[in-house]
Length: 358
Image 1: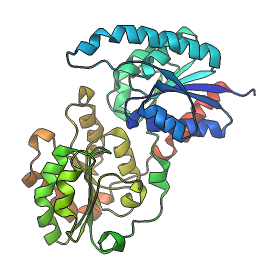
Image 2 (image 1 turned 120 degrees about the vertical axis):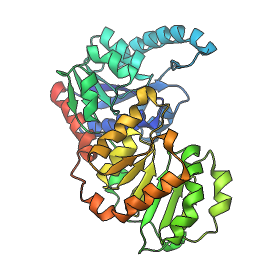
Image 3 (image 1 turned 135 degrees about the vertical axis):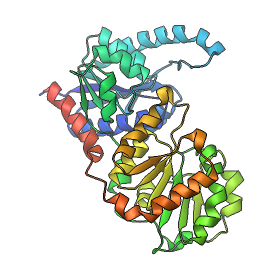
């Protein structure tokens, strides 16, 4: 078989970019040449270069859901990005296109359709994003990370694949150095995280209950995030039983160190929590498109490994009561986990594409 080429587009958030890179690396193991397409000066450009992926730039603008002057530029940038994508595709001559969502995938995927390049899509969320829904009519196969997504896509094309996740997070075997961070090895630990930037809403609800949790013998690992780090870190940095930070590259070790997570409900975070078998309290981001985080969380709730607190109901009292109730039954909840396919998702999706190419 000749050397195959696949063009990949993703952007906007890490939730779209991480799966794209994970699948790209699996395809490269099979000798496939990869070209990653994304916005210039973007997160996807930074991450693609960090992973030594060839990168081509376009300039496309997100379509904002609120009224904004930026909408005037949108159609012109969209048309230009489709034209630029066609030029990139003609030069690269890919055997297939893979899109993992985000507004960047749209023009590249449509250009692939115009150039008669087979299209593969990977959708992370329970409710497919606009780009996936638009490109689905042209796709050869749509691999989804949440069973509910199939309801909203052409059933003859959609198949459950799980979500490609950070392999470093799931293959890590060690725990953190408890002594180094002022923690003990023999306590139940709570992990609060709201993504790399943090969640001000979660932080504000969590901070008032920390003393009560510590007094009951629990310990806290808290990813405050960059937005409110300067507000909260000085208040807790000298308290024994709390390890607080803005961002970490040791997420795998933290997963191995905790008993309960309190988090938003992004698709990749949930896939990691499910793979690592960590019960969770999920507070979906209500502004997420089509309320997809709520439906992401619902799948884990229905498996009896998570509870949902909607943001409109969130306050310190409810969060404390829910946390203590979960910790009281934590061992029983852990028994509800079954095996998942997220850890092998990138390899399986790459295999699906390779089967087509061969």
